[in-house]
Amino acid sequence: MDKTVVFDIDVKGAINIKKILKENALSIFIMPPNKETLIDRLRGRKTETQEKINMRISKADIELEYADKFDYCVVNDQLEVAIKEVEEIIEIFLQKPLVH
Image (tube, rainbow, N blue to C red):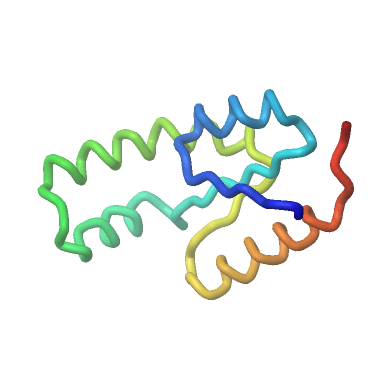
């Protein structure tokens, strides 16, 4: 039985997996529409301190520099649209044969 493995990892981990698996891995970078929206979303959750939010924003700034290293970049502006886009990307990828 074939299995599909999904990882939710940081950008460096994703880049390393892609280096190893090459065309047999699909990398999708999910990004906010802009920094202000990301800040608003993090604050709106009310689950983290301002210090933690600042740390996440700093990390996001660094990670955004790696977006062009991914196979696809999906902007999460409207959740339902982003989900559909990711589903379509994955569906197409899964139809391809593995490279040996």
